[in-house]
Image 1 (cartoon, helix red, strand yellow):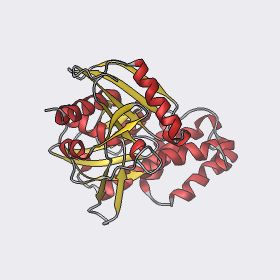
Image 2 (cartoon, rainbow, N blue to C red; image 1 turned 60 degrees about the vertical axis):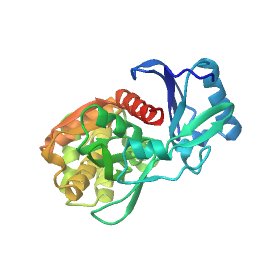
Image 3 (cartoon, one colour; image 1 turned 120 degrees about the horizontal axis):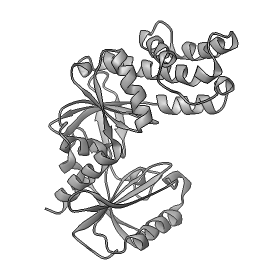
Length: 304
């Protein structure tokens, strides 16, 4: 790619997907491209070919920044995590300059933390870009959530990530409803409504373990107390409700202010409904917008 300081490229390269943005100096996307070409499906030649194809698409772009699993031990080069508290300046200074195919690339580090409530470590790769973008959009302090396959609940202070925890509830839902015993009782997608909120309430109550509650969803369908069309909603509610109970237990002040939700809009809408049922106000933040702002902040710090 020939250099053009008026534009730059941001790439979110995860385990399953590749998303790239050609970004102007004002932070707006000029063009964008996505493909189901995550790092776990590509060898090194495949990664190089993917980046070369992007260079052919945008031959006059400027610097390229790549975040996500491309910087992990299954990606192109493993980049050490930035230690929390970490902000955009920390990510910019720790970005690794390398070359993927014919393209010079800065690989952005993820963030690791040592959680205050239990002393355990946690890690993220990719979500930090959205968090940095959120800080420039006006939420530099407080609790935020990024619903997804592996949902992050994080605390920001002055635009820096202080700590976070990760829930695998999204992956659990995907796997349980795709194969195994619960797959046989599910027909249709999860949606908001009374059945979903019933699941949320049961998950939040913690009267039984999540494993027991999940099998109980099958028993409800078998005994006619829950339709197959509503089973996905109930199961998703159980998982999200249990996750919110975790968040409220370890972050007691999380519900005292508006909680931004960044991610897939349909999933974030479910989280917003579940949080409202718990008495917590939230707002949906467009993931694409947050990502663009995060890459812009990173670029400005690298090229001041």
